[in-house]
Length: 92
Length: 191
Image 1 (cartoon, rainbow over the protein chains, first blue to last red):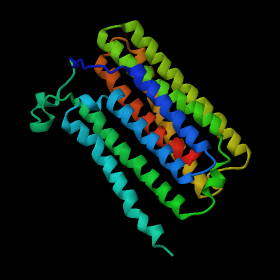
Image 2: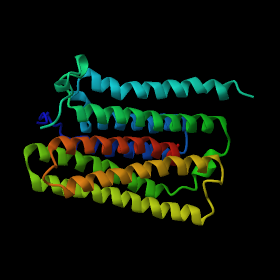
Image 3: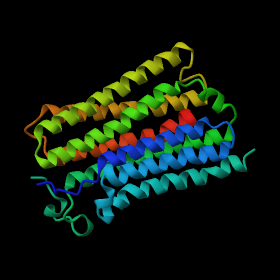
Image 4: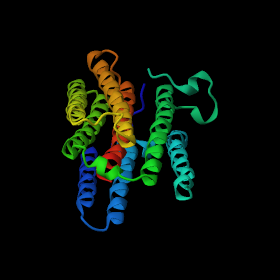
């Protein structure tokens, strides 16, 4: 039988997701400070992914193995991106 | 009764975990690498190239925003379906799963409208690197949404074997599809 788990306040999480989406959209419409806008756009995207992962996917209630299975590939993807950076920074 | 990895003699860290949950998370890990690799390639090419923002300006941001709202909301409905299933509320589970399917179909319908507009303006996968990435990443994502819709339809159709455990597994897949879009939307439409 499946284990019953605690359920966070999903409506509150959803409201936060919409607020973060609105913040990202507002940043994208900003005419100046493009670097800051891009940071806000992707900062809010990361925050949304964390909210979904921790609350809707219940990662905050999972054990270390499931958390590791979920996070290690993300780290690999980040390392892959970082490792490719020299290709265009130092490229011809 | 949900099968447990520990019951089959898998020692150590997996003991006590439901085998289905372990399986879906391993699958999602491989999916993270698939989309992670695509996104990494996109970021590197975009940072190293010129004119990508001008190409991205041709995308229909309004449809992108509406589709983001739909997917975020469908994540809410699918997790509500799981909570209702755990409480034994069959009718609420059916309603929330139905709303999730509706959200997925709406997303796919709007994506089809968007594709039709872009193709009508001559933007095909062969129109340049941006458009190749755009159609590949959003097309692959749309296929995942379609798969999620089918999974939820199967759960809707089979009331006898619609256990909370299976609703949770279907939901985990759906949330992953949502998370992928959370990154695709700003990468393609906003940045």
